[in-house]
Image (cartoon, rainbow, N blue to C red; front, top):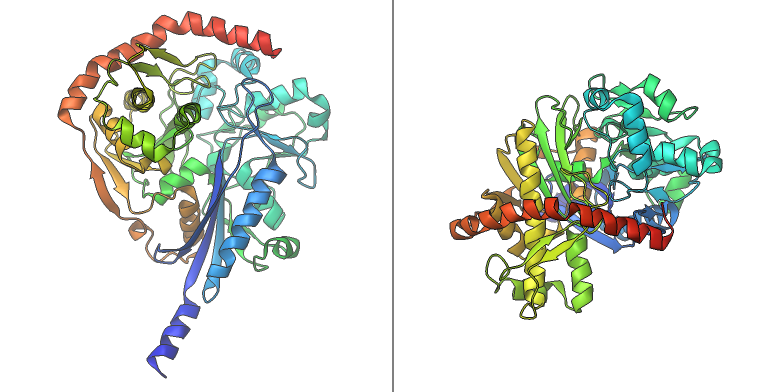
Length: 510
């Protein structure tokens, strides 16, 4: 046999894994070989819908499924010559997508903590079930992140939709159902369905589910690495995927992203730089804290402590649109501005805030603005304000028992270097940068590789290639700014809440 023929046969025997992720503002997909090398990648932008202030939605058919189809069709030609071994999916979460018995969506999906419509239901359920008991059983206080209050909101405000609902889907479980026909949800996603999941028992809380989601059948539970079904004939015809392809249970995007960068050991923390900033720290055991989310991890038997800001990249994108500049140019200009943005301080609460203040009526504040400030200072102030929020969350995680032994940065915001440097300067902590920051889609391929046995060495998939270290001079300067950042929220809360109420009244929303 010639060397050329032998190489061709080897190529045809090599496995590749497909990972698809549906994010807040874009969807991404990758084909990855069994060593972790990316063979092909693709992405699609999309928009969220904001029918009322505080409401954030996606249409499952025109966003989630349409993106999945486009990404899959673009990537599959690159799989020619390989053996496609498995598929892993993830998506934004936790979300609420009510569907009928066939899995057909009955309304647009209500998104995760950025959607703040269920404020009254959060208060109602907390009073009904007890704040301490909710925290003890579920690992998290009720907040805009929780699915339970949004289920009650649906029953109260859209009773006809609720009456027809036979499936409670999330983004990943919707895709799994479309592909395999299975009604299944991973344990991690379920653990964010507070208050209807018992974190210690790792199962649905039957008594509370009967009160919060009466008469609704809950999905079967599985771990993200479990193969829960295979691509059916109808899905194969629609997607081009081979019939019988193994599909893993999937999970929420941030946990797939944490997996993608090797955040799997206790003390490992993922900092996800995206439309929102998200944090995941792996723990030996659950540590409930009222200002954070305690959840199941992506792997059996693991727990995580999580935090999430309501905006981050969304603020910089909003600012970019206002000043009519591109990101590379704005980053270049902001890099010339000294730490502190020449006397500007920004609260990044442009969509309320999630952890650690859980205040859906918080609002953005820009203090110190003068006629001498330009877009470079504004852009840097936005990056600094978000980074102060990062420090606030890391401090809360430390109070809850986290050690932050190792910080790993991932996401689109790691590009360019300025934002990650500001975060390290403000927190005083190193951040490791892996070779691949493509994110959750890459993690999904790894989860599929673990589930199917196709991954050769998961620990060697994504090596660290750079470390961002704090600049001591900037770290010292930011200390005063951080104290005033914390004070600025406290001193403007009453005004922010008044303005939030005025906005709702002007827009005719509750």
